[in-house]
Length: 123
Image (cartoon, rainbow, N blue to C red; front, side):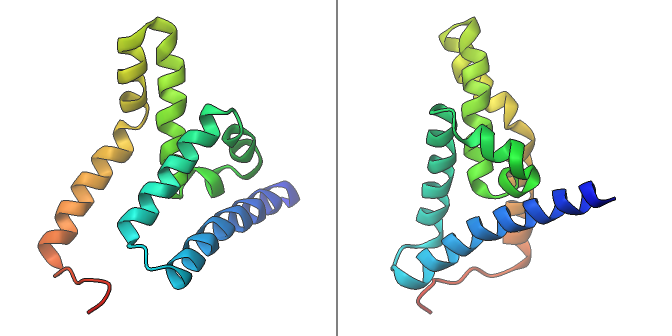
């Protein structure tokens, strides 16, 4: 029971810190949400390519894999595993490891685009 609570606490703290960093960037800079998402995804990809993001995933679990930086981690992890079978495996490995996330993003993005009207950050 205590181990489960600690697991949830670590996930909440790490995921919360990632989101707090993103909120700080939104408040301090004039970067759009799309650019911030790309930067966070690329940061997860680069950190995993350097072998660092795996430690964060091992420590925090879903707290590190659910934010968008976890998507970059998935792409890099799949590409690294796929590279063992060649260049084509490196390209398709990242896509196959993240295919569920990509499918969900496209499906829900389309669904919510049909329901809501988008607005600019400055309106």
